[in-house]
Amino acid sequence: MAFRNTAETWGALARALHWAMALLILGLLALGFYMVELLGDAPDSMLLRLELTQIHKSFGVVAFVLAVVRMGWRWMNATPAVLGGSHLMALMAQMGHLALYACMIVLPVSGWLMASASPFNDPDAFFVVKNMVFGLFELPDPFPRGDEALTEFFGAVHFYAAMTLMVILTLHIAAALKHHFVDRDTVMRRMIRG
Image (cartoon, helix red, strand yellow):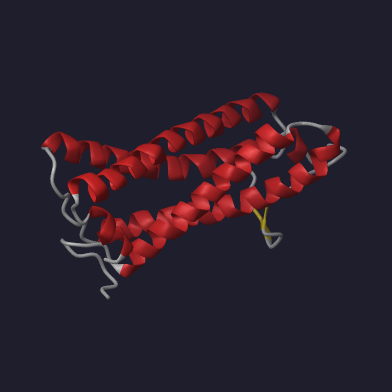
């Protein structure tokens, strides 16, 4: 089993990062949807929402670190050749991957900035929620006082980046399934077995 990528297939590290991030991102999207849409702002769910938000933030940091590692690894390694299709399809695949990477950076950064700007982060507030990562360390804070306008702005960026990511992921999965079941090429197998 090759550790590094080759011109023909993805290496073990690239595949491990791909599947770890796939599970992590799907989990974060599901948790975010649950916190915002299903729990809402009901007073009886506030404590649970705050606990889940800290978990969401912590795993968001993990997603960001893995995204940076993944992009660095991709930059330092060969990228397997695009199989089949036209130049337009190859360009669409490349643009889709760039959009995925952009979302993998924009989502955690906007989430961190939204939480940092939140009135819950104001040290003078009655109830302060620090940006902790698994309770081990606090993230740096570019906004030491709560700012409702910044919270709303970064919240909107976070929301629309999540919606964009869901669309891109759907297209990414559909393209992988098309390659596997319609084109019957090795695109999906290369990401599973190498």
